[in-house]
Length: 401
Image (cartoon, rainbow, N blue to C red; front, top):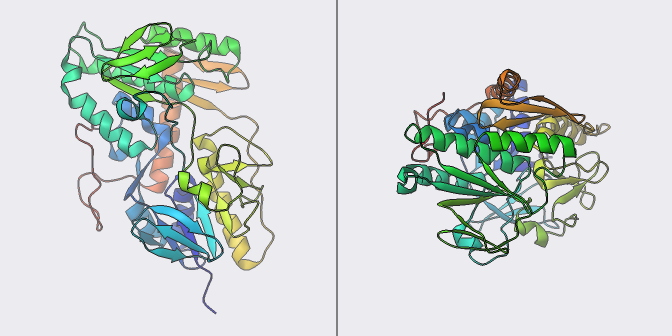
């Protein structure tokens, strides 16, 4: 009998660590195929550092070509558009299909597109990351940045939006002549930034955001977007040369047609074994998964911790052994970038770091953790093409600093 075929869809953090695990062992326990539309996959933890200019493009992109080669895994460069679960097939954008015995999904999430006039044309969701990075590079090289006061509006006052607003403020300040600054405005519909945090911590974070030069607009109800900026319900107009959205998280829309059990947000419901609650041959990890037994926010730390457990689960399934469970921690250390090489550490309601010496120490810790992850899975070498195509570096990508 042929060995069961494992099909991996998506090159997210958990799958990257799964491939590293197999590479270290000399290969997977059976035939494996990875399907991904890109040769490289961005590591979200280093995105603010890239936007701020601290990292080059290759430094925060996983080399999926090299990783699959080391893991002895076949790679198909295509985009998944659907599933045929009764036939155990994945449907591809090119019209083809791939069969599987076991399927693992690590397709991440996208930023929500606000259902408002002009949103589809005049805003840029942060996720998926590749289109955002291309648009960001075009903006940073464009004429708007050379204006006396380039303007950026960031929609979404959660931790992700805060990090990006601070990173863009730092980047614009670095690009501008001395004594001039860009204008970054952070817009949040709720009364406070980071409403998921303790109120005292959120207020302290807001003070640091303002100290870095970012304008904060809370209780802001956006009604429309134009080529010139953002209109608020109270009549305020926020001029913007580049408007990005970091609000909510959405899964791939094709999941709705698969027959998989989904949560109200459209994410794949999984049990403690990272297995679909409706289809026991399907697993899901990272942002695309909703953990029924222990729901958590969408955060890269869970995807990273799921990688080794996913390897153990798949090997146990293939060998008919007891399947281990994934137990996410109740709280974890959030390391929040503050634009310049400073960071906050948040855990158990306590704050360490900021814009001073403590923040520099937290940045070094975050930088060390992020670089360790990238060293494990392998970064993209932007100087030479891969065997299957060059890693396309957006124009204006900075060198690592």
